[in-house]
Image 1: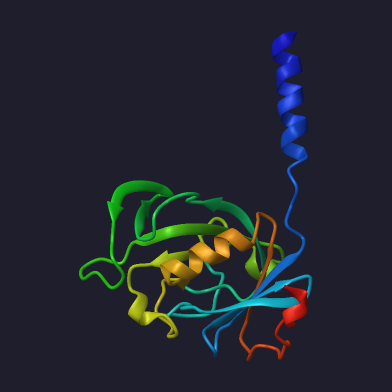
Image 2: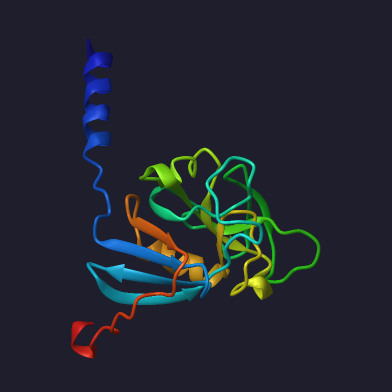
Length: 185
């Protein structure tokens, strides 16, 4: 009986975890930039890198999905900049920016889940917003489907948005959104 009660309490608490409905990230493929909005107000702009292969949600395409998604999971809390992840687990290795050789996922992972038919495969394809050791490629299409960021930028983004935050990848220039006024800070 106690175990059943404990299971019910855990399930209830899991259902009460709040989702981030305030933040939206808009990624422009032509501009290779991301806007971060808090209830429609601009809070940050970051350079990014999308797929060098395609704009696609098709399995095996190595493409970046275009359309609406959300942050399904956040991985890497407290990891140092450059911490290497393999299969979403830290390896213990830390790489400096632009370290020669490999191109692993580093620093933080925001795992995306599609919220419409055009992005339905994103989660199963392991489409992330993540840090890259190849920071020199940020600002150009260079990924294998994910949205790459500089380590310092993905760490900042990770601290701003929560699970449930909206992500929209567009194949158009970014909309003009005025910066926040100094009084708003």
